[in-house]
Length: 317
Figure 1 (cartoon, rainbow, N blue to C red):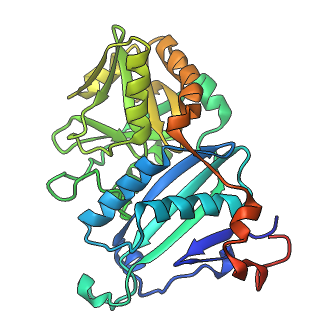
Figure 2 (figure 1 turned 120 degrees about the vertical axis):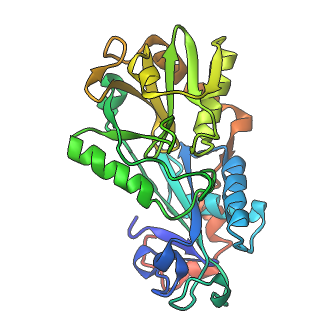
Figure 3 (figure 1 turned 30 degrees about the horizontal axis):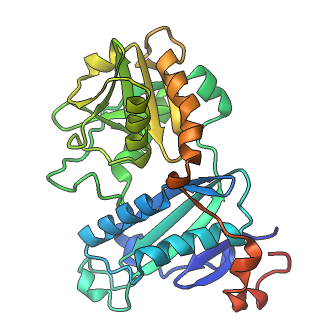
């Protein structure tokens, strides 16, 4: 296959042709939202739940997507299909912006409607060895922005707060940073939710602590409860993570990845713990349950719906 195809405002086009206006308020001001969705061997995990979260974010921002839930699900599946991503691990990025306007911030000036696009690609957030040996992380000095300013459940295009946390982790020479709330409570990592275990109880910060309502997070709570573990969503301090028996991160890109040190303090045995290993082993079965995924159609069936793909698209795409 040659150049990847991107779905942009109703059409598939080569990646190099998929451009938006420099006056788009998503570019100028981060005025928009996005969703990250993952698939394994043609099975897209909790697609409708991701689309519902995407639509909730857009609704909060007062952006009219102009597409129904079913249409958004369909375009995600079609983007995977035309890029021949039915095998292995693939990642979908669905994005909507306010659309082009002027150089002011007033959304009323964006008169031509929202910009909507969908990208599909392979992904590996961490090397496989990190899933076996664990991550070293830090608590960042950068705090999560207050929920009184922007609810953390809005998956907006403005990730500068998170990026500042990543910069700190980079300077510290570690793989990730865990961010605290303005009040000093454990929130989330720069792009993932946080779990830890103490005395056999699987714990994670409650949603009101400036964190995204992660779909993988919710799934791990379900898996843990089905496995008979006690779970808790609460309010935690750095002390609770430092003294945990196990810890890990969850997210669409990361799945479940263990933490073995925070601020150079060893967590538990310094190795991925038994509860983490148990939940990760159950994760694959959970993803494959019929009610938890949508199937990617064949490339041929999708190509018949987009006749323009036969014209102007590089041979072999």
